[in-house]
Image 1 (cartoon, rainbow, N blue to C red):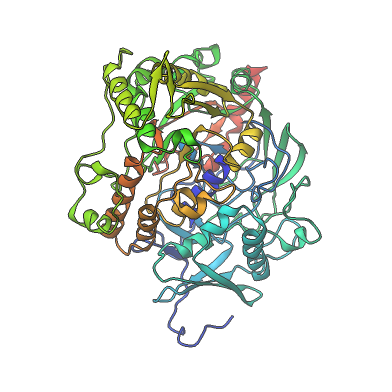
Image 2: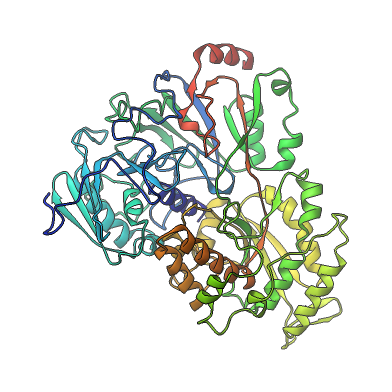
Length: 622
């Protein structure tokens, strides 16, 4: 589940003959939803890379969990996902690197320092008519898979059709506005759209990973892939042991190594992943010098767990990277398919008793801010009372939550002492209003059945945050248990919506679009494997999602997104957690990097092994 969120967040950020009447369409080197791409057609490299970065060296990285497949696009199996994603996944689901995958690449690639812009990668040029009814991509003739086979329009079309027919159901939701795909020549492919209102469609299909049709011929695409795949990317998988380790080796003949979108990136000769079942063991491996770099997402660890000799003597560097990215929302998602969470008053009561101030002060060293929006850290977040335009959008819907139009959305603010009596009293009032009663310290429904549920986690480190919250829930009379499972089991349980409450992350976007259907639409609530884990199914929310997707300018987008935000917040589907504008990175001092501040804050794909530093550092680790 988290991988597909992180994949959709990356597709979103990336995102023949002409038909009669289309002769005025001019091929472009890039496409952007906002104005004009920052870089000209003849740019030599992205401005945040070192185009002369040295190649070489080996790095060791850690991944938590296990894997039994190299196909991340299907429900079955637990995928090793770094071939299509980034080397490092940062807190909030953000990836450190562009949308060009390490094994499978995309038609367009995003710039780490721009918003909603895709530059031609596998595609040399892109064509979009004024009426936005289609998009065509002209492939680079030099584009090759690692076995030397050309990347063709047939590969693109086959990938699209296969992912929609046999891939995760959420992909069908993502690409619902694409009518069909047409091959207009060996190097030209065209996607026709059902609507002219979805401004991000060229980026969406441009962010489609292109798979080699000839590799999958004779294979059942729906089964876990246990063989090393072929791709067009800068790396090949040269060694692996399912569930334990995988080695990516740089392809010296990568077709794009001197392309503007490839120059200065993917500089490591080998990238080795070791899989750990426990994050504590992974941390010990890092301290012992077995792992080279670590993204730290636990504030307590960042404050106290890095006081070891290698940090004190400078062999390990701690750095904070400030980013300007949307932070979306992280929180405890309540499964409204379960009876206990069917009533929004119960969900509100459960939300009110999460004591963020105590948690932030005592567990996080006051490192975080409280999340109060599904679009946090952007101007799309709802603030104050609805504007006149927001009210106009919401007016047709009669069953809106009562306070939505008359009150700003707020959450209790405590003094951090742990004495949160007022939120508890208000929560009990809401529960009684919803028909629940407390008898012998147990919360019972109208039929006398106890209010019981479990909180599903996939990481033991989350227990230290969750258990104090459980204590507050028990004060209300809930019978709450915490259930921590391994990532593979977690994936299956959340894919099947077989849980009561779980920690969920919805990544943010500067220009949200079709991914919102997978997040919160009624169709997604009924689609196995979708990201709609709370089971949200409301006509007003569906309508606002479509308004967001169809918005033609920033004002329309802002109004629709804020109206959607209010609907999500006032229906109490999640217990909002926290967010940070910093990425915490620790690494053994053996790297070079461009040292250029970028919007994403951190892009590991532009780093390289500094041989002089590495020799000194590696000797010190022996």
